[in-house]
Image (cartoon, rainbow, N blue to C red):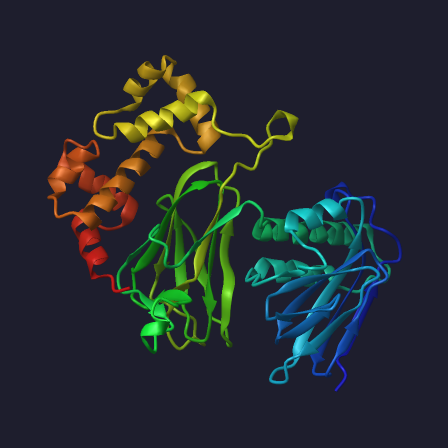
Length: 421
């Protein structure tokens, strides 16, 4: 059966909108219910973006064949021919947008896209598909407001791509890294069938309410990769002790290595992300599993310094961080300002501007990070741990700990030691 095809052609370039910043829309369309053995694709415009919203298959470009699955994005430049072969089990749906403009080469570099590597895998981001469908519309008799809508839609589309898929600056931490702390009943999947397979796990999962995975990182952005499936439920994302989102990871078919959450707009500095299993699910899901395949953090600050070099800590802030880490028990912000020989207000403003956290918030994060390690690795009483990280009052320490972790120190220790990985 031939796929149903829709094509919309832009009669004139959308070059009147500053929003596009050098990217212009040319055509858009979609192929639905693709079951043909091979579909030959090409574009007469500068570049085409494809999004596979349903099904799976394989693409062949420049002699190289790659598997593509639901939620994958791939690109086709002008002058190249691409063959798409849908998997026989499920009809596939392909949405596409043609675009051009002087910003295109830099955009492709930022996305790390080329003929050799044309695929951006696992874009599990509902906003992207919403914006894409908004751009793919009939272009007949466009009013000025319609043109502005299309221009802003194209801008948002690529802003989301840049936010989620800039590969060169992201550092990957796999699910079995000791840098990730799991509390509650987490299991590794798949379970090994024999001794040789031991340790060859793809991901960790839990269905226990309030169990969570925690990752401490230094940077300005964070991604969470996991699996969406029919037995997956809802997860709360907590960053630096603040609720930011609930992610529903249900999918009617298994989709592994999916980008489930991203935030690339954090202030540069130390952050903590927690993925909580809520125990909740939508009406279609059969269970409430939450899966961690990996985290990625944006390791460098996004703003550019003079001369095009990436900004780094100033000597003042660098020394302040070193002093905090070396003396958690005794240091406070007044003492820190005196040691640095700067006015406290000036120091706080500089520190917050560079790290995105106040000195006090940063120091609390360091103290709680050290306390959690002691709770997990030692049998020291809570009073001793509180003193080791700078809290003379054990009860005040417990209140601070619970306000940040939603657990008392004792509960945290118990949950961590019950973790079965």
